Amino acid sequence: MSTPDEKLEALGYPLDRVPKPGPILRMVAVDGDRAYVSGAIPIDGKYIAWKGIVPTETSLEEARKAAALCAANNLRMLIQELGSLDRVERIIRLTGYVWSEQDFTDQHLIMDGASQLLIDVFGPDAGLPARTALGVAALPLRASVETEMIVRLKPE
Image (cartoon, rainbow, N blue to C red; front, side):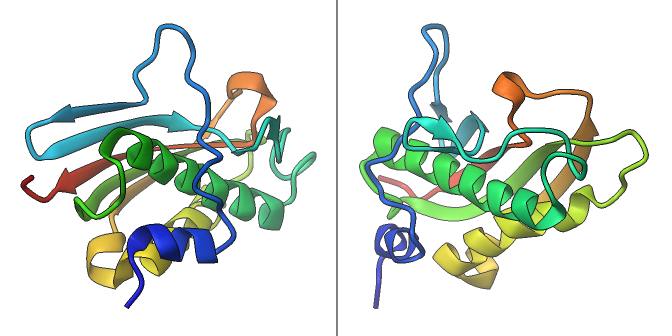
């Protein structure tokens, strides 16, 4: 049986590509049995994989891939903080922000990319969170998608 870390890597997300935080930012804040994971944009290595407004500059399918990469980056942040994903009991909440045209209403379909990644890594019980998908006027560095999450941890 594969570990969550191994599953993430097998899905094509190398564990060593952790996004670099800004100088005044904590990527993960642990409080008791909860981990609050900061927003992640679709950075793959050192570049932003998908930039621009959905659907005019970034297609819906590209944005779904961006959402999956964002969620993978959230998990990479957790690995850096915790050492591995073994302490993750369940993903409680996933919030997704999509830089989209004012009349675009399919943000929820884009966030399915992030949800599917979490299910693939943790299974349908622990990996399927409560979720919100929002359309926004802009995101940092022209990223098309950003995700953040709240995670319940197993006792140490």
